[in-house]
Image (cartoon, rainbow, N blue to C red; front, top):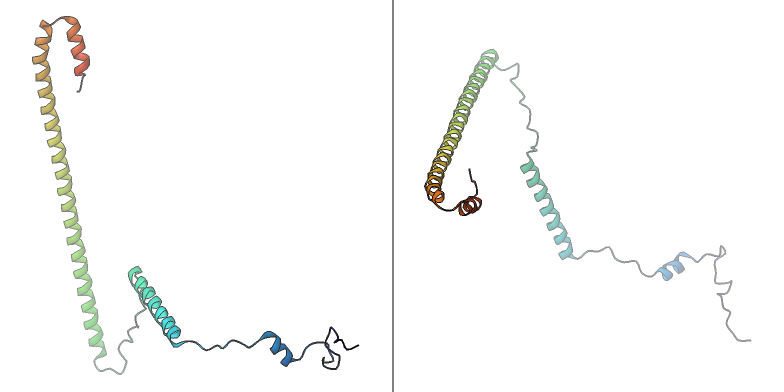
Length: 169
């Protein structure tokens, strides 16, 4: 008789069968504030700043540079414009000539360095060959000295000595 119904009474429910916005907010709970701690805000700013700095540094290392502003040139109303253009042309030609001269000098220096390096290599190779030849001569002399003593010894001992000494030519 006095038992409460299992569902909410029809009088409290809205007509569509769905709960109202106020009831929905109550069900979901309070919305979390979007406010941010100041320390967190500054830490984020610091991280962003460091990241951008690293990116700029890597771009600088890679060689990608910002495009330079174009030279606007000489305005038509400029007095003595023709003379100014001629002097600029002369300067450009002189600079190009100087650069070409530097290039030819650098090429000549590189060629000389390369020749010196090949000469040094050849000299080192010749020295090694001389050392090897000298070592071979010494070995032959040692064999000849040892060979005369071996001839006096029995044949079995001489063959055993030849095997142990091994040919190292």
